[in-house]
Length: 211
Image 1 (cartoon, rainbow, N blue to C red):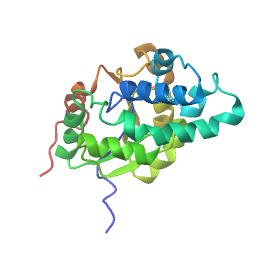
Image 2 (cartoon, rainbow, N blue to C red):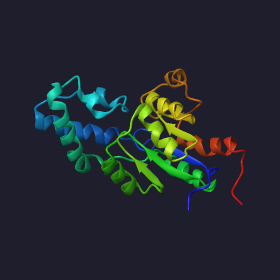
Image 3 (spheres, one colour):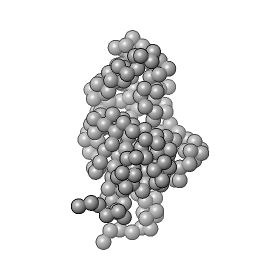
Image 4 (cartoon, helix red, strand yellow):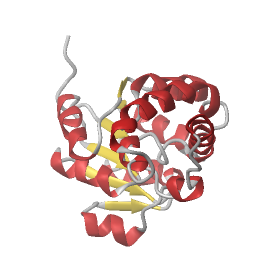
């Protein structure tokens, strides 16, 4: 039986929206650099997480080496980046707020799906669907397919995906983008962090609760 069209569906980005990926990402980059004999500027590369890995590696590796380096990064990831990565304060409560309104929770992320699922399982997020390896406007297809009306992210490219899907863009300031950058990109709402999301959602939906 299909879901009612009117049911609330809220999409969330993963990295730097629900989880603080930076510690784990740094550790994987260091391990990859050790294997390749490359000293990556780790702090600089993790200051504004969001773009796909290939774009982050592009300035530091020959083009022909990037695909294999990306594969190796993803292989190293489970051993270096799952247990060190916490949920942001308010993340569980944000997901629970959607549930209180009878909604579905989906995670739409640029991260390799298998590694994203490891984070979800380790942290204990209760979600209905996870879609990985989609970035920027590419997220729009997933948001439309899943019937989302809200997408929550931290990066200007999350805003692009929401706007391309014609859904409400909610941005949090836990990533590398500033309020001004997010507003310039066209986001509809900026919150300091996910701790503010439940109250915002209540206001957005008129404080209604399912019967």
